[in-house]
Amino acid sequence: MKISKKIFITLRDRIINLEYPPETQLSEEVLCKEFQISRTPLREALHELADMNLVQSIPRYGTIIKPIEVNEIRNAYEMKVHLEQLAGSLAAKRAKKKHLNELRNILDDYERAFDQGEEGAEYDVNFHEIIYEATHNNVLEQTLKKLTSQCLRFCRLIIPEHLETNRSISELNGIYRAIKTKDRELSAVLCKQHAQYYFDRIREAAI
Image (cartoon, rainbow, N blue to C red):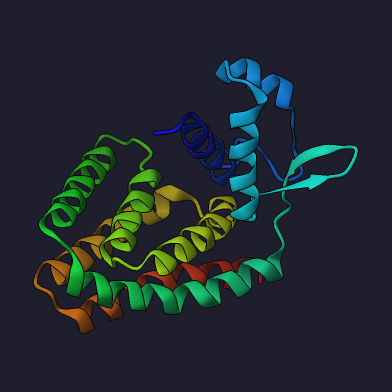
């Protein structure tokens, strides 16, 4: 994996998990020292974060974490709900054995983390990214990754993770079984319901 990609993933996760609050300025000098890299791979990573709509560049000031815009989140989630449905259907049709194995391993790790009282939000994210990959549709995959990154920051802000983990694991197990049995209709419905639930929660809380 390219060094710029590794930096992108690290910074993306920090932004999504609110380790970098909205409007935080990112110092290229500090980040280069932290990761022991030159400015070139860092700027490649920052450019990719901008494409994901997570950071923005301000002339003569630098790069900041993009503020959370409620209307933008609502619009993103409206799209995400329906695209998750499509992803569920395509994954049930096109998923390979390696995708099923990866989904099962993620669920096992998620359940283990939950039983041990550990945070496990990344397992939910990883599970969905395998589904997106299993669609074998690059446009759909990249679009959903972008939408998910935008929406997750807001979910982290208003929905306590410990209240949702048990429900999430149960729903993901249902999606996994539907994909494994190639039940396209059920997989589509469950993926849409899973996304819709969180959309309804954030809409009730703040939209």
